[in-house]
Each structure stands twice: as structure tokens, then as C-alpha cells.
Length: 224
Image (tube, rainbow, N blue to C red; front, side, top):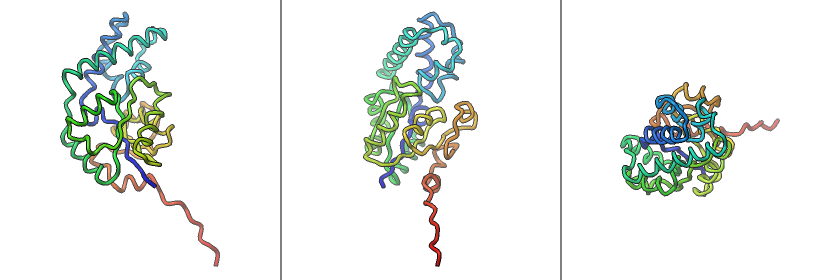
């Protein structure tokens, strides 16, 4: 059975958090919402803009139309910045992903658009290592399962292992993927979701971790 490792690449490989938090902060200000930047930055860590809004008490002043406008402005602002300045990437993480891709097909999900992510992957010399790209952009927590499922389908796999921050893994689990939380216990507890495995860094992701996610079925011996 073909399996694929699906990794959420932002804040792991690409340095996008400050840009995304700044874009959301500006969009909130334009809608008359006064929120401290450090609070917005913390809320955006490890999640999409839509999920960050759910974390922000100040954003509860928004009605549905205001919320949609804020998210649209934040996405547009971030994309304009990335069009001019592609996010920097961690070469060590890049090399680790290449090594993993040699052992198991590798797909990615991203908070960027598919087109943006493909440009970034090419710049990081990862384009040949990634079999599929799927976007979480514009999806709230309830809709994200579709992106994870799409990544597995595009990789032509039957089973998937998702690796991301705890909050994003909720959607992966709904899509039927086995889950590995990347990061610290704070993120896990904040999301209220416990993954099937946990690694503090990508360097800990190895064959033993993957094998543990797919235990052999129990076989009852025949009576003699």
C-alpha cells in the first residue's frame, strides 16, 4: 500500500510567520480592530489566519462580512510581500526533507497558494523532491481536511502521515491521516489535540516513528 508523508512547510522550512502576522494586524486595524501586534503574532503561530482570528478576543467584534474582509486583506497583503521578497528558508530543514523524500514519497500542505509554494520549493531546490502540493489558504479549521486529503490523492497514495503543528493536525486526522505533531507541548495542549506521535524537531522523524504509526495487526494463533 503506497504511503505518503505530508508536511506543512511554513514555520518549519519557510520563515513566513512575521509577514503573515503583520498582514493580519494591518487588516484588523483597517477594520477598526485594535489588537496588540505581539498578541496577533502569538495567535498566528502554527495556524492559518482564519484560525488566528478565532484565537483573538478583539476579533470577536467582527461580523461575518468584516471577518471575510479582514481575511481577504491579510491574504492579499501577505501575497504582495512574498511576490517581492520570497521567504527565507532553513537549509538544514531542506536537507532533512530531501533525505526523507528518498525514503518515502513527500507531499506538502501550505498556508500559501499552490503557485506561491511551488515557487518557494523551486527556490529551495525542493521541487523535484515533492510529489504534490495542496493549499490550506482560505480554509477554516472545519474545512482543512479537504487539503490534507487532496495532498494524499495527488501523491497517488492510499495512506498518509501528516506532520504539522498540533492545531493543523485536527484537519489531517479528519481526513484519515496518521498524525505526528511537530513542536512543543505548549502547542499540543493549546490545540486540545494529541497526535499519535510527537517529535520535537524534523531530525527525529525517522523510519521507527513511521513504523510505529502503522502497527502490525494482531493475529490470534490457531489452536493446535
